[in-house]
Image (cartoon, rainbow, N blue to C red; front, top):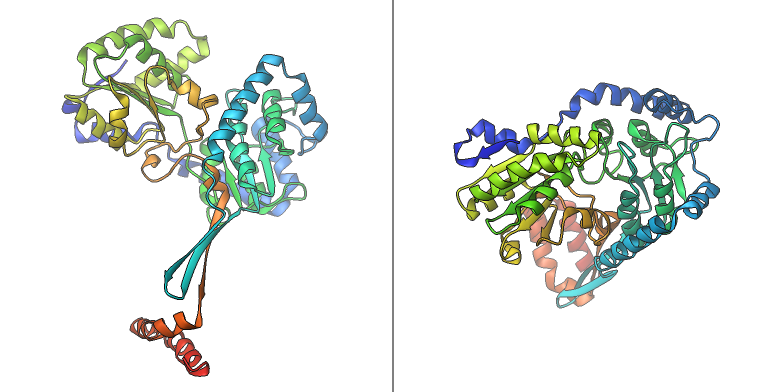
Length: 435
């Protein structure tokens, strides 16, 4: 397990640590451009061809769209424990996101006779991208679908990659049933992003696509930016545990494994000014790794050899500075008084406080959204929320008296910027109505 002494790092070593597994997606641009061009020109045929080529799945028999019967069957066949768990998680996620809903409309008299306000409207159609990758992700369906439904989006489309037999993961379909989503397409990858960007004979064009994906998906999103809204950047999973000498080394070690098991390109770091804690965690991690299945062990070992490990600082203030510079997707604070540090954390997708709030809970069922910005984008982006599915329009109304009051300033401002038609519209309006 790597140990980084922060004070001893060169500038380049520090930058490399901050970069984590930052993938240069531009290497995938040529293939993504080919896929986008063919899907735009050939529609369903290209989508089917690429699904066979990239996923090894023929959809000629099943078709691109999941049937209502398949969705209902998945929900009915779900075992009781999984069904109850999904329902409980959905209830909590729903409660949290309901609190985010803004006022539908507000108006304020900015000055006498000058009224201005905003109205909020849901986006007309949105595609939720639910990956399949290394496993089943019904949690992503809940995290994307629930805020979309709460926001009132009229048309919600889901794209998710098929299994080898062309079917869709049962738990993911059941989660869609719980959320109330019925329009699902069994496609993923670059071809899915291109399909919703332009529309095909079967798949509708959408104004926005949102959801995590691999480097190929992100390459297609980057190239299609401007054709459709591609949402927040969500790449490989990452987490920091910020801990002091009072943290339980066993809990710290357990929680370091959470993000590390996502895949070899994940990042999982302990940041601490306690050398004693660092040493204890270093000894514990190898023991805990052995308790994982072989595939997960391999992931974790690669993470701790590449983008994970322990960052040892001189003091708590230095640890906090590093956290804000790194801007992690998940931040877990295991200190004597975690709430006291909350105001000092400026950059993190989510902040989990105390020993009973592991990432596991927030990933699945605490309520906050688990689709979060990665790769330092927590410095400028927030996690998925109802706001991702809404747009604001400002409006204004000026009374005759208000117009008379501000006409002089309006004309002058227009002339300062050289907009003579702007000025004329006010000047002649004032003359026409004797104001």
